[in-house]
Length: 327
Image (cartoon, rainbow, N blue to C red):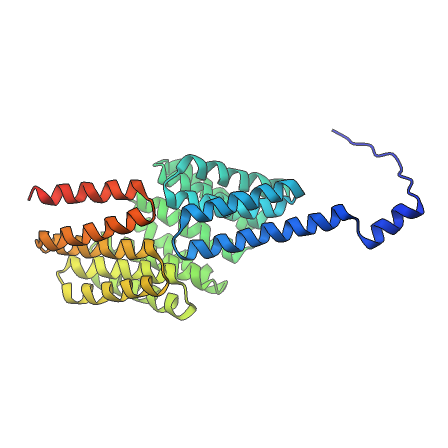
């Protein structure tokens, strides 16, 4: 649809107002600053694992950006909202936010953002169990990344293609895709991405019972994450190493890593990661047949779930206590 605009005529007073700034323009800037502040506060809440609080702040920021017509900022908020909703297990809201993010990227012809949005859509589809549609979404993202010669985008898309093949039990293909992804992530100097792919590769080696490669790969991810201060990938690498060591009954090493994991969570004041640490302790003791101690750690995890007002996690933990109580 074509839109025709008639020539505008302005008087001197209007020109002066435009030059010095109208109250409306000033108000728009103030609103933008307020929205940015809400996003900043939300990021801080995220670092502390307070996901519900972060979502509320992001929704406030989104309302502000809608009122100012800032489409680009809306896209960024939808991106953060989508990731948060995924962590909270709110798949319907997550899909809505992620698809809105993709739509905005397409409207703006922002190909780089389209790559990341498509990868987020694909990740969400996988979490819903729709692996084949996710695979096609990652391929679409990879094609865009190749067209604009985005090393970062190719690394991300190949890594997610590896994950999709891993879910389809094409383990050999998954490992090859992860290794290919690592080449692009290293060329792009995408160190968080490299650590992320190494963690995925560690998962693949763990599943095919390649203990030596599993330890080496998670170890590499841990070193990179620690160097760049990427706590998320650092904790993931630790989790992988804990699982790998406990699978061959190297419990001393597993407990040593778990103690470090808990200390990091406490240092970050991240209650959710503390909860995960207690749950990991419980699983280890359960694996060793020490059920009373396992129950104690599950109960400690439940207290943290209550403090986070995470009813879903609390019910899951109660179910685990019920299970071990029957032994």
